[in-house]
Length: 209
Ligand code: ACO
Image (cartoon, rainbow, N blue to C red; front, side):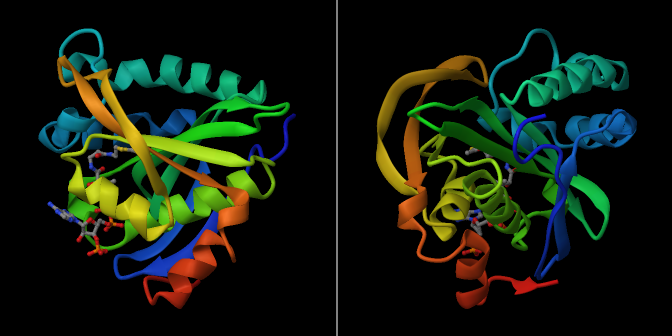
């Protein structure tokens, strides 16, 4: 067992509804597959290139293996694979990955939200909950993320919770079939004057549930 896993986080209330996070589970298969296939055009420009066609990669039958391997990583303390729920239903994922302890105490964070639930504060609230958990119970000192410069929605989300831009990683990651430049953003625990969730509430972007 490692600190901060498993956990249920939230709620934070945003215009879309009540946002909570919980560990991924085997019975997410059907929803995961349906949303990922429906949202291919929304997701594919921003996500790492995978093996084979999108529909095949997101077939319902792939979830048990994927879910089990992510949960195994979580049990080893290397990852926190969460589902974002909106009013109790699966609407996306938030993952904290490459958790490194020792003198670094660092990890990356990434997320997606279904297009149908977009533009109403869900990702911003989920990211704030994930950050506060990472800096709190998980015990991280630094959390970083990478984002394509063209991904204005995700850059807005990162900005709202206080991430700083640290530089441009040229041809960093194979996304949508080519190595793409990514902005590196970072945040260390001492930069957050209150919690990230508090900051959203004070900015009028969320309320406590
Ligand atoms: N230009 C500028 N700003 C934009 C644009 C745009 N084209 N589109 C949206 N925005 C803004 C919105 O106005 C909003 O800001 P506001 O609250 O100040 O108005 C912000 O972007 C979006 O905030 P949320 O509503 O909290 O985010 P949402 O729930 O819509 O999710 C997300 C955003 C996660 C980027 C979603 O669109 C998505 O899943 N996209 C595809 C996958 C993806 O890009 N994932 C992130 C990869 S990078 C990473 O994981 C670090």
